[in-house]
Amino acid sequence: MTPIWIATLATSLICFILKVVGYSLPESILNKPVVQRINSLIPIALLSALVAVQTLGSEKSVEIDHRLAGVVVAGIALSFKASFPVMMLLAAVTSAFIYNL
Amino acid sequence: MLRDSLAVAIPVGTYGAAFGAASVAAGFSILQTCLLSLLLFSGASQFAVVGVMGAGGSALSAIATGSLLGFRNGLYGLKMAPILKLRGLKKIIGAQLTIDESTGVAIGQEPRGVEASRYGFWATGIGVYVFWNLFTLLGAKGAQAIGDPSAWGLDAAVPAAFLGLVWPRLIDTKTRFVAIAAALLAIALTPIAPAGVPIIATVTIAVIIGWRRS
Image 1 (cartoon, rainbow over the protein chains, first blue to last red):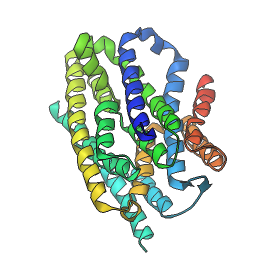
Image 2 (cartoon, one colour):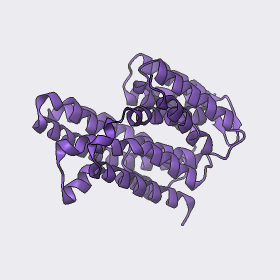
Image 3 (cartoon, rainbow over the protein chains, first blue to last red):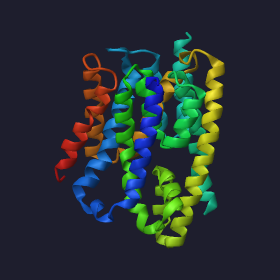
């Protein structure tokens, strides 16, 4: 089995188990404020890290290139409350334009 | 009410096309791409898996990042269980449909009563599932046809997608601080740690900041 197959199937299985476990535990766990606080911050940390690494990372180095322009435009579009597909399209068009210059 | 659910399902579904394209660009086959949407069915986790693998990360890093992002669905389940009161097969299906959007609409409908909340959950969950999977396939097919992903801006569309996912969560100084600190830590670790590790490492920031009371 290739690493991509392992990642595909194992993540699917773990995430499905996490979903089912949620329906099988007592709701009182949610009453712990520390659980709620950490749970709301984990996606923020991971997603922000993914933005940074996918924008600037290139194998094991940090590179500024066409991707950054696309992501900056995405940020501007989001601050003007653009919808998700519009924002992504603007990012892709900007990045592709600079890449193809 | 059904309109509310479709208003969520259709745009989210079309974003599935971006996932399909990004996944194929990252080296996943069309079958693997569609399986991620059918089985994993959680946008942020799916993008994370293909993002980490595409960047040359190990399967373990991809699994850890995708699973950590899937954790919140479990907490949504805790919230939805007393509203939906599911048993047997319905519990399995309901659990699989428990994501940001279905939970969000269900909670939004809570003031109108438990029936409206249930209806919102199922209509949104099923709607997103159908559109998400349909558009994943279209996006994957499309990406296979176009060749070099950079020439079409796909390599910027993926981080833009993550930015769009994190954006609505940045509601105060604390959340913005976590976002910036995580981005800086991940970039600082990129030259020295194996691919994928810089991303998972930022969980420590969430735990440290979340542990404190304010």
